[in-house]
Length: 67
Image (cartoon, rainbow, N blue to C red; front, top):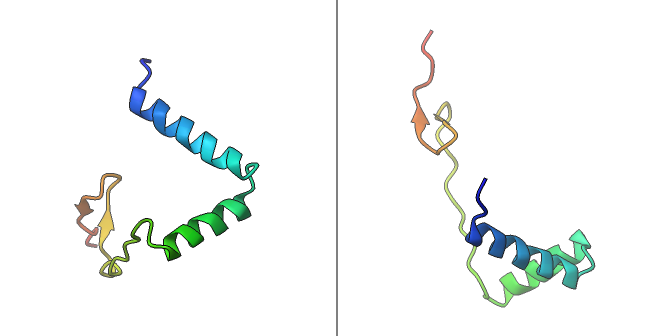
């Protein structure tokens, strides 16, 4: 399988970021929350889905089985 340069770049950035915190998930979480508070990036909240609306693996809605 050929290596994807974008995937490799993302993995490297993730590894470097985690290494800053000695791979401590609590410290990473605190840093992300701090950065969120500072407005470094935006989070998105979505409306809940309609009851019974199922999706396939690619986000497409599937028809609920009638029975």
